[in-house]
Image: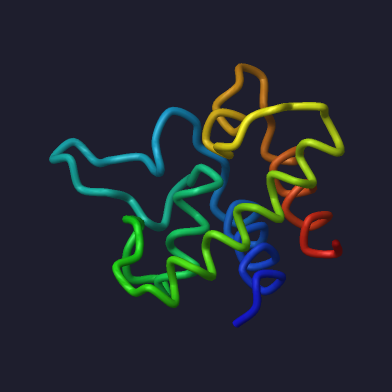
Amino acid sequence: MTPEDVLNQTADLIDRQGHNQGGYCTFDDKGVPQLNGPLCVMGAMNLVVNGGRSIRHSTSPERAQLKGKSRNMLMKKINELTGFRERQPVRWNDEPGRTKEEVVNALREAAQR
């Protein structure tokens, strides 16, 4: 898997399941993560990098490196598109008014380099 694959699959996941703000995902009334529901950009990216098994940070050095490269490509594109000067995609994702379409489009454009 390449960083471009990660970015495209993350976009697909958010496009299909919805966009979440304020957390990697939503939780049920017992506090169980709802991996099939709306996801924030990094929650979705973690899920893609971890092969759909976990929304948490990767423990594998290879997966962590892949996620880091993907995140950096995304932030470079966000900076180009919006002038947003932040290193953490979560802050951009959680800005009030941020839409699913903006997130999906930024991911797809970042994948194109």
